[in-house]
Length: 253
Image (cartoon, rainbow, N blue to C red; front, side):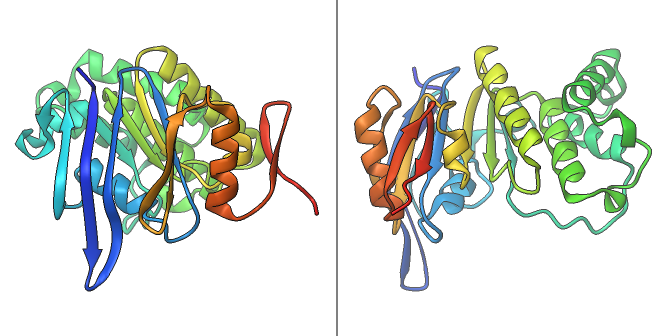
């Protein structure tokens, strides 16, 4: 059984079609990269598929069960989402913010258990956020805040981790660090979905690609179809590309 199934998702705002009959499946422990130009429907697809937005047409299933039928705490054990936009209104302590990932998937009493504390400490260690735990999140740089948000997802410890533009605001060192982290999570059995604009440096990592343009799928398949993947990226972004040391780079004309 597939861990994640999306079938015939369509979505429109007023008379504009954002998604047109989009379908994909994902096996446990696989990493899917969703890419496409601005306005292709990437973020909309992720929001609907993860349950953040209500779908208009189609089905979304996790382990064969429709996403709407999950209780909120049970769904939080299955999937967590790092959204592209985040505008904190309160200067909550970083440590308390990371703890919110635990709260989303458990009850009040388990919130203070020893296991919960270990999960939080591990998330902090992995994301290297220990040095600013006592700061408020409004005091952080954008890059530090992004790492704290990733720590919150890790503390939640869901089966599926979905990231919308996770490399935003990170310097090149931490972009590679996060890609390597996601690869390790995938190797541990986590299922990963990423919407990423930085596809040149992200290209070596995912197992599968889903390319969108104007709300339609123009390519869907594994990285083993290398030539087809590269041609699809060229079509999606209307640029010439070439493969160099396993990175997909624009060709200077």
